[in-house]
Structures are given as structure tokens and as C-alpha cells.
Amino acid sequence: MNRGITYVIGHKNPDTDSVCSAMAYARLRQEQGMANVQPARAGNINRQTEFVLEQLSMPLPPLLTDVHPRVRDVVGEQVITIEQNAPLSRALELFHSHSIRVLPVIDGDRRPLGLLFLKKVSERFLVPSREEEIRRVLASPASITKCLKATPLHELGGDSVEEFNLYVGAMASETFDQKMEGLDPRRMILITGDRENIQRQAVELGVRVLIVTGSLPVDPEILRRGREKGVTVLSTPFDTATSAWLTRLSTPVGALVGDAYPSVGLGERLDDLRLKLLHSKDPGVIVLDGDGRVAAVATKSNLLAPSPVKLILVDHNELSQAVPGADKVEILEVIDHHRLGNFHTDHPIRFINQPLGSTCSVVASLYRQAGLTPDRGTAGLMLAGLLSDTVILKSPTTTAADRDLALWLEDLSGLDLQDFGRRIFGAGSALAAYPSLREMIVADFKEYQSGERRFGVGQVEVVSFHEFHALKAEITTALADLRRERRLDTAGLLVTDIVQETSLFLVLGGKELPYVIGYPQVEENLYQLNGVLSRKKQLVPHLLKIFKD
Image (spheres, rainbow, N blue to C red):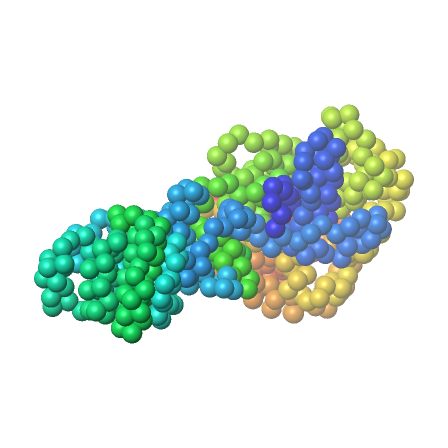
């Protein structure tokens, strides 16, 4: 998903008005100077809409299956990492120079080995509670050499990580002998300066690592004896105090992390990241790309970042009809002609809802108000949406403004509105043209709430009821399956004959439905709705009333 983009999008199961109004309004906002705005659709288009786009040679808007914010939307593109063999001192430099608290430890292929946390590192190395913890060093001769910028005068088992005890030889020989009694020299790191007696005693004991500070010389005989006794001898330019401090920070970071670490993928939802962070004792998680390599680090501060995706809703104003995830992103505008539903925003937005026959009518009126003339293709889109939703200006939802706008769009598009309207409905009227009867039902299916009752109504236009009657049994079965899957109290399909200007209503609900529906029953579950063409203005208000009562 693109960063910093605004989608103009209609409802799920988009009809012609929904798709065409999204395309036309996106074009209007582009002309008005809005950056990075484009149309989209929240579902597959029907045959009628497909016909319109083909006739006008207009591109199909991209499909958005959901707009839930993803992890990739809120993390940065640059990530600071550290390789497993780097010493802890390098990790502390990175923590400080980049002002970060979490550092992924990686292998040579950028795959994660674990997470290093500044707080835990500080607690372990800066505030030890016992002397033995202060002395303990987990390191390898190679990591000590790197950390101390030392010259190895003799090195043995360079990359092998071992647990050492750290001592400083800043005392008389007799005192040194007493201090060394009972200690294991093969677990000992000894730091000293140019005290030849101490150096000699250390190699005779066979300490594991002897560090000589200040780049001071070491007697060749001591080096020879050190090689015989298996002592690693290092020469560092640092003084004793600095050397002792850096030696404690020479632990390879790979030895400080465990196999278990929290992670998320770039494509996972932000809600998943939120759950992992809220239920984890760690302050951050590793973000992985599609190949399992480290792409970013996410902390709780990332949860505060706004989603780069914003929406302008057209042809609906209820989140139940919106693209999934619409409630998780910022909605900038709503352009609609339906009843108002439950809709809340954190900030004031542009909300235009007019009692016109189509959303394309509303958009066309906005072109006029802005003093802008749509191009030929955009005018054709708005004319198609207007004619589709008003059933070629025959629906009772049609207003004088719709008729006026239709004539204006007819002139701009160069299309004959009556001929274009008949061809639009002719292209979408055949029931068998849908891939399946279920897809025919859900192609323009909307759900509603009346009190505790949930119901859904689809609509399809035909030029004759003959095909519907032939498929009625199969349609009833598909409708029953949909009702059960979506847990609806009532589910129906309004079949509208645009030639005869009447409808049949196939509906499944409770046993009381035939007694309260108020329409004459033709057959079981089938009712005659003479003169009813509009689901929005005629059927749904009636159903809301009877279900509420």
C-alpha cells in the first residue's frame, strides 16, 4: 500500500453509482489541488459497471480488500543493527549515537538472532550487586582484542567465547601470589602495566589472557614462556582503568541474546503489533521482511504514528458498509445521498449528504459549485451512475435536480441518456450472467440494523421476471446460506423489472414475517411490490419501521 495516499472509495459490493462517483470525485479533488488522491473500490464490480467502464474506455479502479494499518505503514525505512561478533562496547556506541533503546543482533545474512535492550544491558553491566559479578567477563580473546584495539603478541583460541574472571595486577609480587592462591588461572584475565615480575608470574601460572597496558614492551623471554604455557598476550594502548572497563564490555553481543525474541512481519496488522507490545515485557519487537530478514524495529511509540492511508467515503456513510479497516484510519470526507447511520470521527470533516437520486448527482453538483466542467469521460461516468441509481430517471428517488443534472451530463458526455440508460440496464439484467447466484445476490447487498434485528437486502434489475422465476428455487437456497453465514435475522433480494417499473421481493425471515411485511404474498417467501423501484427510499424505510414496531 502506498504511503501518504487518500483513496476515494464506495461501499462493499459496489454498484455503478458507487464506482462512478468514486472515480468522478477523485478527479474533482485532483483538479482542486488535493495531492495523492485516487479512486478505489471495496469489492468486485458487477456486469453493469463493467459495461459502463468498457463503453467509456475508463480504467478499473484498484481493489482494496481492507485498509487496516499495517506494520510497514508506521516503521522507518532505516534500521540500526549489530552483528553477533561485535563487542558490547560497540552496541553502547550505537545506543548513544542513534538515541535508540532496542538493537537487533543479526548474522551475516541479516537474519535476526535476538534483541539487545539498553535497559537490560545497563542493569547487567553498570549496576552489579556482588564482587563476583563485577569480575565476570563473557568474551573471547578476539572480542577482547577488538574492544581494546590491542595488538595480539600471542593469541590462542581467538573466537571461542569463554567465561572469565577479571583481575588487575597492580600490587607487589608477594601480594599477587597471595591473591592468586586457590584461583583457576585458566579462567583468568589479568591486566597489568610494565611490571615484569607480575607478567612473569602470570605466564608461569598459565593465566588465560594477559593484557599489558600503555603499549608497553614485553620481554621476549616472557612471551616465549607465555607461548609454552598457552597464554594469550595482548598489548593495548589504553591505561589500566580504561582497559579494565573495556574488557568488561568486550562480550560479543551474540552471547547476550536468547533464541526467543518477539517479531512481526511488515505486512501484519498494526493491531497484531499492539497486542504483542502490550503483552510483552520487552519494549520492542523485530520487524521482518518477506524473506525473514530484519527490516525495522517497532516500539510502542510506533503505535502513535498516524496511518498514511486516508479515506473519502462516497455513496455510504455507515462503517458497516465500508471497506474493512475504515474505522482504523482517518476519514477526511463523506459524499453521499443515503440516510444517516452511526458515524463518529475524532475531528470535524467535510460531510455532504443531499437527498438526490444518486451520489453521482451530488458529485456533479459539486463540479458546478466549483465552476469546473468535467471532461467527456468523467461526465459519462456521472451520467451512468445517475441513470443506474434512478432507473433511467423513473425511480421515486429522482428529483428535479437529477433531471437537470442528467441533461447537463448528457450534453458534456455526448451520450443519449435514454439510449445509454437502456444499454446500461440491458448489460446488467441477465441473472445467469453472474459467476454464481450467490455473487448475484451479494453484488449489491447491504446490511441494516433495526433495534436488535439485523437484516440485509440485495437488489438486481431485470427486463423480465421470466428468468427469475426459472431460478427462484436455487436463489432461495443461496439466500438462505447467506442469511445463515452472516447471522442475519432477515435476508431478501429485491428483483426489479425496469420495463414494467415494479418489483418482486424474495425474503427469508421469521414465521411472523408474512403477517407484518405489508405486501401481497405471491408465493411462499415471495411478495409483489407494485411501483417499488428503490430499495433505499421505498423498501428499506418500510422494513425499518415494521421491524422496529
